[in-house]
Image (cartoon, rainbow, N blue to C red; front, side):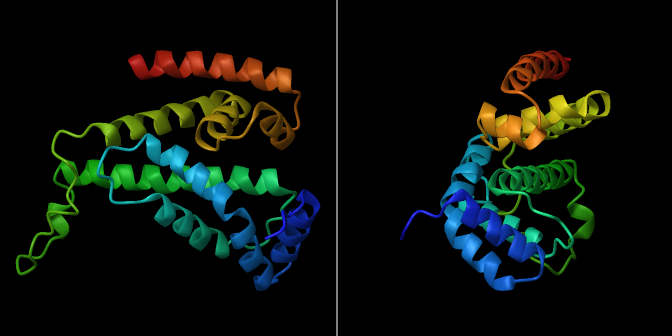
Length: 194
């Protein structure tokens, strides 16, 4: 398969935003490996034995994006930035659900006649869900104080975008991205130690 240029990807994104479903099918093929790499970076931070796999995370991201209407896609980097946000939401939602189940929240929804599926229960003593929830809460707090710095963390750490790609998405200089990256990481480290 020939390498797809950035201009072709932008054209496909714009066609999709104007209702061309075939453009999304083509994008799925063109950007699949890049999204798998992004999902793999996210999954690296998950607990061992997590039931959601890299491919499933990519597929769930596509399913959530299919319903997006009226978004004017700018280019490949903009698309990847949105995908990074969607993947983060999927994993945080799953972590909150696991944490709720760990505290007995899942028990209220189980019928007495239903057999318990031990494969779906969170691992005993697993704190990864709590850590991911704490990180999400800290990022949300940071976003209220300085949304750009929170976006820098999300795009670089979770999305795996380079300094230059992050600067392009946020429409700032690479130096600003690096300064925000250093300050935001220090702030997050302090918050998460509390």
